[in-house]
Length: 230
Image (cartoon, rainbow, N blue to C red; front, side):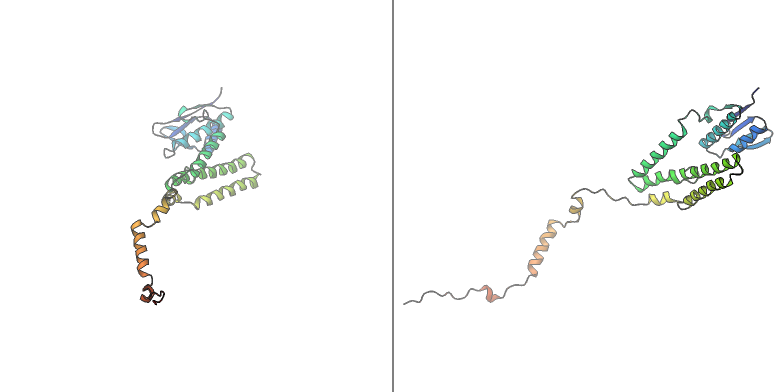
């Protein structure tokens, strides 16, 4: 008879897994659940401080591992992400939309919002990439403890992502302070900087008054010379 593991979302906000033998419990530990044994009985749980999306991701991953090990899993539909679009397509669409949002930003605030999705310290794309690289290295070790060099390469790559995150703390706030230039409209700038007609007329009068005047002798006509009277 197959062994059943139940994973459910509790009213308290935590996610609890019950049932299974020692191997199932080991798989739950590996997925990220913490073991607890108190007056509620032995169980594995996810903390209430974890975001619901992250709880669903961990619970769905645990269910996949348990099913691969031939366990029957009763997964709460609220935590089941297997009915979603394929992960690769969803991730690709998400990143393309983010890139379009960054490229299409028309202000520092819009750019800060878009980049925030990339560099958020807990839920950003970079943080998820770091977690994925670390998970890949750990999985390499679990599959072959002799492949430590390959696992180390994943660990180094994860450290590079951590360094990138360290270069960008608070960048969203800084981007929001960027002054957005006014859009260029032909003739608007020229009209804005051109002097008014009154100023132009005053400048002409000033230039005329400042010009040197010719000597008086140059302005008085000389005696006319005509034919002599006879």
